Length: 264
Image (cartoon, rainbow, N blue to C red; front, top):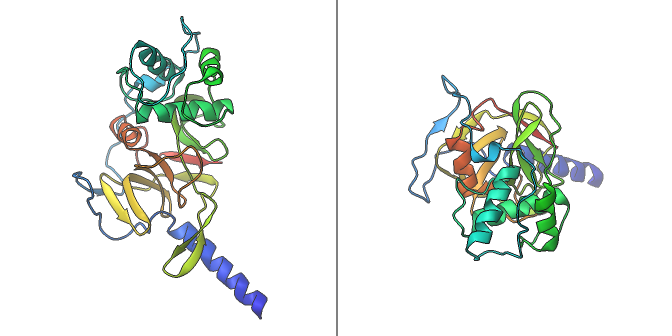
């Protein structure tokens, strides 16, 4: 009898994790930031994605080695870093502004993940060598336009016909337990092939916290913007991105409804 109760409880926890995750996909959108919220189920038209700086896949060697750089640094070396990251496909903004801010740090995290390095967000000797070598992740898919979420490397890839055109740092489910309404659940991001079925152009104040411009692909699990995107799994199940990165996905139409999302 005890075994049956435990089994039933575990099954209920898994069901709720899949059904709600970061959100329950219901209710109305809150507005912690001044952005209008509009829920879109299926658009009547879907414009093709706009080419972006991250679409380059050149892997040429930079003319001059980049020295040690970290968040807060400024100057021509940071410009060189930003240009090299963009050249390799690591999204770090729309232009090289010479300031090593949060967006550039996110791109460095992504590079370090792809290279199998320590994820400290600092461009030291090993990270600089990865830049010089042109380290890039490879896609699993071979045809079509889709998003791939690599849980092991904690990377979100924009892919077109097997070519990775955009690489972003992401943070998926922590695989840790959490409490919600006096029950314990597992923060898990299920693997599988899905499609974006709903999106909200604004902030969604979900039961487990705010989601910025979420694009739902598996129940309450979405790709969404957040203020905290550490270089390790930390979410309740969603794939977190930086706020600027999420804005880029929207403005460049990289993830419209019906886009395939492959989580592995």
